[in-house]
Amino acid sequence: MEKTNKKVIDVDKVKRLFSNNKLEEALLSDIDICDNCIVLKNNNFRLTYTLSSIDAKSSDDIGQLADQVGINNSRIVSNHQIHSNLVRKIDESTRTDIQDADAMTSNIEDTGLIIYTADCVPVVLIDPINKAVAAIHAGWRGTYGSIVEESISMMEKEYKTEPGDLHAYIGPFIGLGNFEVGDELYYKFEEFMKEKSISMSDWQTAYDKIGFSYHLDLGRINELLMLALGVKSENINKLNICTVENSDLFYSYRAHNKTDKRIGTIIEIL
Image 1 (cartoon, rainbow, N blue to C red):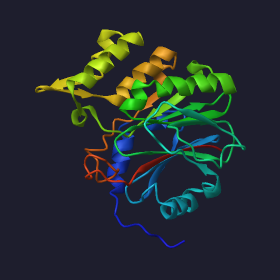
Image 2 (image 1 turned 45 degrees about the horizontal axis):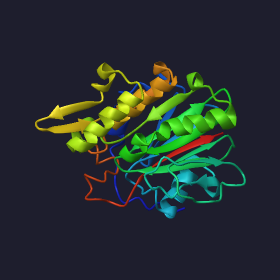
Image 3 (image 1 turned 90 degrees about the vertical axis):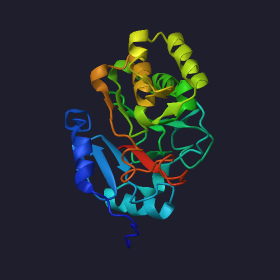
Image 4 (image 1 turned 180 degrees about the horizontal axis):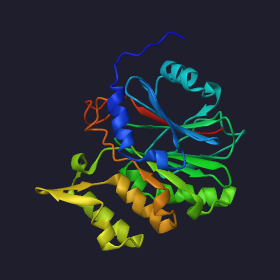
């Protein structure tokens, strides 16, 4: 397939960003970085993040990526994302459907679950014991709607997943310094975190007040929610990579003037 890349990516910068997150010590310790994507894998799972050299919403671009990485393009599954807390179970009877939802779980092999983001938080959950995965689009609405909890609950029900066995990957997403919110949304989240039994000291690590405005760290909020559900701290990989600050590498809705192009996060069971 002829390459259609329109943008040159600073691959060395990508390598520096990901090396700073010490992912070689995580479950998916085999890391490959090229001009289109970052691939994290082991013998059983493969996680792919696209870079802004391609648009994950473009079927041509995803076809090119699939050829490059070895993904079965005919078995990539997506949602019609609506900023909800809806989770779909993907099996052979549902994998060809596109439905309104913002998360998917699956235990079938050779099937890529893809979510689209451009500042929102991509969350991937991996159960290496029962060989099951989840791909989650967690914007502020989905986060507030407990979409990670809903996804873990489905994995517990469908695959007998234990939260303590899960490994999580969070990000890239808009960082705290760039995610300014109004007072009303800040107080909604403060009350929400209390309802989820998050301590005030932990909650204080997920927001800041810069000048007269509140800023939220949605990645940290989702991390705290996972910890409260029993996911182990050492199994959570929160990528400290801001899509706004690194808009030369990743699509950002805010930095790119409300772009309709998206980062693709794809998780597969091999």
